[in-house]
Length: 297
Ligand code: GLU
Ligand code: ZN
Image 1 (cartoon, rainbow, N blue to C red):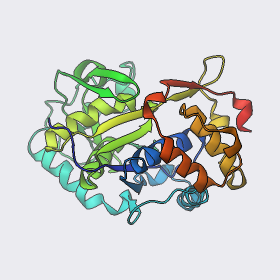
Image 2 (image 1 turned 90 degrees about the horizontal axis):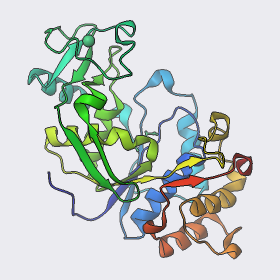
Image 3 (image 1 turned 60 degrees about the horizontal axis):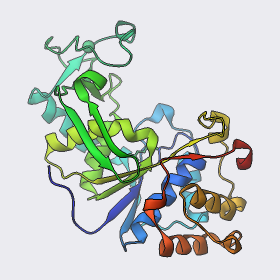
């Protein structure tokens, strides 16, 4: 596996299942500033592959929030809903090579396995009709070094099992779409939330299988409350107010360990972003961040 060494290309890849929240702002900010601080490109991709979970108006709200928070992306916005033909071709290839297979297990049949697929359909030879498609995983550990979280490894066979790349309702899985699009867009650096740390080994396997180069990874801290609990859903979901852009950007920068001078607190968003770009130090990003929910209201 070769690691990318070309000029930096980063991306932000929101899912339109709601507006951006504080956690997504921290991820957007880190990926943007990490790219711009080295003169890199920053792309925007709307991960709209799950229409049942899409909230009407969320795409526009996300774009408006990003613009009013001062983010400028390079090139055209890419939508995953325009990329189905590519996902379909990949699933077909993996299936015809025997690297993936059709699974007809019901949710009920899979209860009690802690989300680790027990391989029931592995050798069943089902047709693709009314079936999910699962990728066979090797009995191997996949590991990488995250720029913030350090060493991370996962045994795909024991900890994940054969995973879905196309759902039974024909929708494509995030794991497949994200790997194909990151490669197609030439992404060298993935900066995103730590909730995706344990998806990364699956993505490393797909990259290897498809002959793609491996991007660098930086997973920004999970945000926890002072009592150690994750931010509650109600606090993750209040939309980022446009009038509060500077205050939230300043708070997000401090969450990322960047020591922003107090006198910049009320500076316009673009000024905060250029300060952050000029002073960016990814080594200061903490592995977890504590934030009082009350300060986000
Ligand atoms: N669309 C995913 C999300 O909003 C992020 C995907 C990624 O950054 O790999 O959680
Ligand atoms: Zn099955």
